[in-house]
Image (cartoon, rainbow, N blue to C red):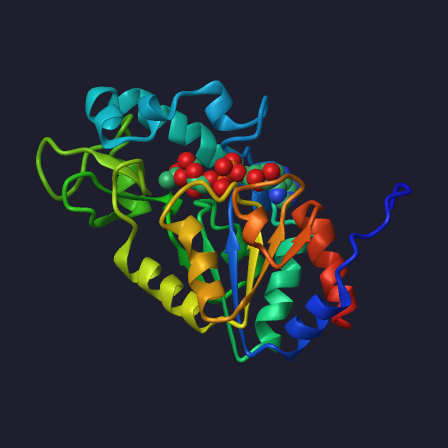
Length: 253
Ligand code: OAD
């Protein structure tokens, strides 16, 4: 363990988790950081420290510079394809089997929860590995993309329309089904475990408050302070993998 001690979890938090029926986990880019995928807002290493979101992650940017936006997402897709879920993801897979209702609402677009084996995952901001028609939002399959290369490729559905990544850009609404399911899970949660998010981007950042209103214990796992810290019931100041591995051992997994 390189001389580092495992992050401690307060006994009352472990007891509440062990007795819980309904658990909602909310994850952000910090969950994927140890799998080698850059976060957005960390100083130096965060994507928004190097790029301006309005140049790359808005419908306007895609309209004006489709090639630049497509190429940026292509680079991120390659990073995601090369990444492997770390030990913390496998802990969440095991925890899902333990509780009556267990769901992950993720702001991440990398699909790592599903690749690790988590079943109930609500993708609040889409998935970078999927491609859709920029006009209709209909899915475009890999076969079409292979046969029609381009930066971006054309949409199969409408002449003159382009394909785009199936992600939520600034100014766009969240996928309705995923958002509704996440709100429902938050409203029923006994435990809301918030891992690796700056808690700045709404509506995702509003989920812990919904859970807290119904009496859930809100637990923040993050090496740094966030706007959620002041209202969280429990704060684990540690990276996601170490915190989750320690939790699993407290729970006897
Ligand atoms: P951010 O980059 O805003 O925040 C990442 C958080 O992870 C920070 O609070 C870090 O302190 C924390 N962190 C870093 N390393 C960590 C580790 N190893 N373990 C645990 N936590 C760690 O990312 P998000 O909160 O996910 O939206 O950002 C929210 C949304 O803003 C993203 O989904 C994206 C972005 O613009 C869209 O693309 C629509």
